[in-house]
Length: 495
Ligand code: NI
Image (cartoon, rainbow, N blue to C red; front, top):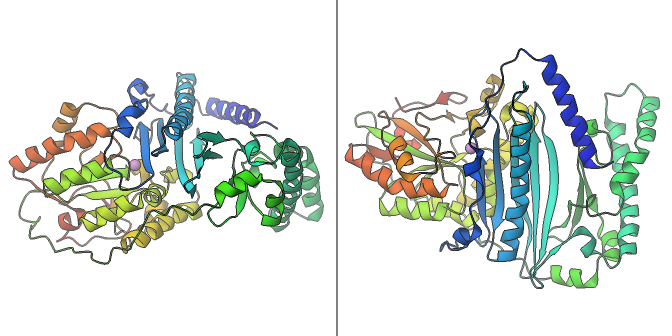
């Protein structure tokens, strides 16, 4: 069955649910989505800094946990045709979000819209680039996860559609047939191990009922195989999203395709492109942490901490230049997924003496995910940061600051909130931002995002103003130097 049909059913059931909850307070609607379109790419490609071959552009609409919001990233490379394609791809999600916001206007909604898009680099060599996107779309308490691959033939400057990998249309069909039986085994396995079924008879019934869904969902088409990808070890995978080949309750399926199967069908030309050596973004562990304890005593003098969330991004190098020039140390709450793409810049953040905090793997609202996923979001990000910088981050900040009591209890370290929010996702005006960030209370924590150009442009003047007012601009380590921080507790200033 087509994914769109499922989405319609999904939204229809949400509508029903929302009518049952008529007396619940409505989430406030976004009024100014117009300013948040992706800027033109000429501006992006004019950036001088290239610490990493692949950088990240992240766009954001809304940053309030209880209002509709979107955080979407796409890669920026040295290939214009790739950048244009990925920008257009992202614009589609933004348009979908805006339409959904409009459609829900005036309706009671059970929960705010939460749209996320982040990506991993699966292959990066001289000839081929492969990105795997994960779009997590939520209009209620659950996420609908979509996996989509963008693959590019850099030699011929062409996007590779799923069908383009294969020798012929017939090869694609034969391949799809083999995948169908592999998928069936996976489904059987999942049903067999699911203890929620009463008995084997019930299991057999469920298995019998999925026949048509499996057949339709695994037929050879670009839509069904929009998440087919090779990785750098020469393995191939296909991800079937929730509802695609089985009932929604069974979730998504990631199927590893044995080499002897895939290699029969993929064209020789594509296999040759893949044989090229991988371009590794060098990630040498930072051994020299060179952190001299600060001489500033924040229990005696006015201090303020600048914190930057949601990076690293294409604007982070410029921000680091500014901080270096002004001799200011800050704190970066990074996303694990973005850190794994811009490894060199993460290394630079650590080497230059800034603090690095954990801001989750891909920015989901923790109130909407299971405990096991929440733990994975944190531990995966810890691992990525530790691998690059040699240190596990000491602080955690929830995406949108949103969390439950249970979330707070499992973080295992102090949780950082903020005392100043300039709403920099919304106000793309340097003067406005300078004003909003220049009047903190002593020992305050300023929340900014190094994914916005205007935020980075405002920082030099913010630093000047704060210094002129006698503030010492410090890292969180320095701000809390004299305080005993507790795991699972919220801190929004250093008082
Ligand atoms: Ni964030």
